[in-house]
Image 1: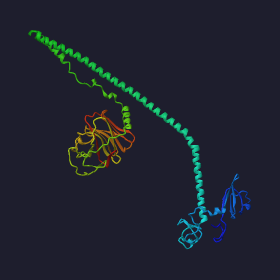
Image 2 (image 1 turned 90 degrees about the horizontal axis):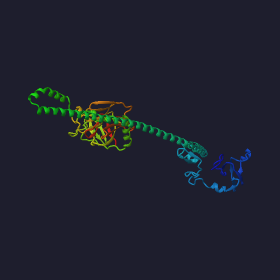
Image 3 (image 1 turned 120 degrees about the vertical axis):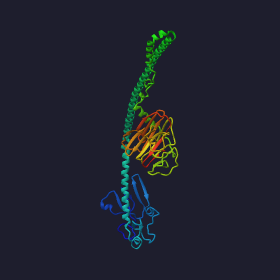
Image 4 (image 1 turned 90 degrees about the vertical axis):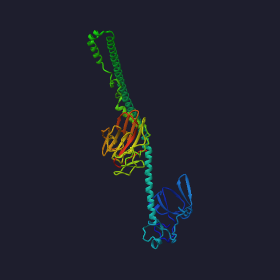
Length: 460
């Protein structure tokens, strides 16, 4: 490669650029060192004369470099220095072809209209890019070193402090919950004890009263028997008034009647706090949900089943075969499963639906006609959480209780405890209880669904 300012045909020695502060020995030609008055060159052009030179990088160590051998050793053997097509020196860089070309390629070859640049300028651009990249790497390295030296060490005490604060918070909250639970436990136990004593005292009072009444009735009966067996006709007639008085006294003793006051009132142990804590504990600890299946024999003709989704069709989806289990008017459907005891939970995806009903019902619910006996939530055999547009409510036996929600849940979970007689509707994403209801179930219940907009689906 020619040095800057020389003609292509001139044969000049190769140009070497040595950077840094070095000491030189050997023969060579220094052009600018003495003119500029520099004692130690930083960047010096040096044209070797083909002899052996010595480059000292360290005062204690010298390395001998054969410049002739070095200049004949190519940096990359795969890169030729002449054009394969024209045999001329590669002196230009073509941007379109992204390759080195000769002057003939530029003037008469395929790169006439292409943007080119002399090799020296292109190499200078690449060197500048390398310098920029080195600066970026240096800055990146400095940033990492600062992170290792300053940021990470400072995080260790911060993490320890945050962990200590978190532990204290957990302990404080659990202690608070324990205190609240202890106080609630004491209150409920006292309520139960008081109710038990009241019922027991009522029973004892009733026992004493009816024991006394029995003795009175027995005495009156004995008196009447004596009148009947021992008195003659005259005395019997004379004693008729006494007989009526004793009979009237006996009639004043009424028959025993069943009274709730003589029973233990289970409502005394009802606690909103305990119910919610229990429900949340069940929701948080119960990970397995029931895998329900829509019962196609009960599905209304206004519904269509697609995979695991129940879709509402304004017009009848198709003519299902009629049967005693199928709802023929309301867009209802039951699940195949039914529950008689234990705790059961399932989730329904309602994100796409603005009109639905979810809950439980006895299998004895009516299936035919438009009456309330077949309408979920409007009869005594179904317990339903429903949405219509932005209104939410809980319905049972035509009694509707509005449910105020800040946002519409994407999923609705149903939890039923058959033994504790508890029904809970909740938001699975937050475990927030939407509505809870207590009732006594007299028969097995089945999950119930109704869809009047888009679709709902069972969570697997």
